[in-house]
Length: 349
Picture 1 (cartoon, rainbow, N blue to C red):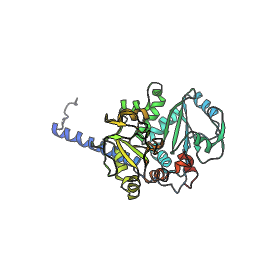
Picture 2 (picture 1 turned 60 degrees about the vertical axis):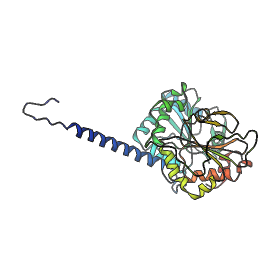
Picture 3 (picture 1 turned 90 degrees about the horizontal axis):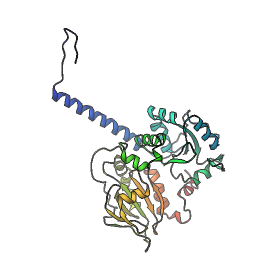
Picture 4 (picture 1 turned 135 degrees about the vertical axis):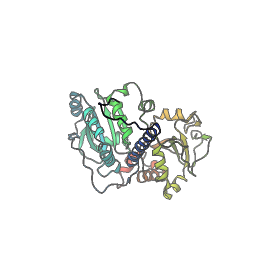
């Protein structure tokens, strides 16, 4: 350190420097954990107050070709947001994700966002020019969980689709994945795995549940149907969102009893452990997760007695949303209504 004549310098002892660095690292980790906790752990029941869109969202004229042309002219990509006014996950996206100044600034710089109300009856012209209601548009796009966002590139092709709410660190990655054209070279799963976008905390094994069936996992239902539906938990170690799911929603006795009525299996998304899929394919947990395109943990995939996938929850999920999915599958409502989203829209919120 340079010092003017007559001044005295003071250096921290080496041990004190190490202690200070460790303390700062601990504070940073605690701050990151607090942010993640706020993003993932929240009451997901419908909100009493309807949602207000940010004032920088585009006015919903519901003419997507025109909206896309304006976005491209401004050097941006178009994002169509599918939401509900009282959806807790939609509020979380607006309050937490877009409430972060860096995320708002980056989004406004690179994207135009047009909102769609999945309950809406107004007519919308989709990106190909077809006219249909907002509700029918949402059903066709299979936006099972709100908020859902569909990203369109400059050609009008779909670059990325997010179904459900994702915490800020993963949402930032999604924005960068599209804005920087990574989608042209690799899948979002590979992009996340390659980078440092996966937020992890305390190391440890997977969370256990009494209703999980032990390995080996032969899930084949292609030859002989099962008597019960199947749910597969794809998880990983060092997964804060997994810890929250097991520590909160899965502590509810109601859900525990319902899962006991399923064949419930837990797989490590990165494991090379052998598994026979519901369709009878011999593979590994890692390869199956890659084939399914999973990038978020925990992801819960529900299959019927014949091995057909019914619905998947591959975003943040709490008690209220998970209970609805369990009700749909456990009551066998899929026999009369194959679409989970259409079934939900036919019921009170």
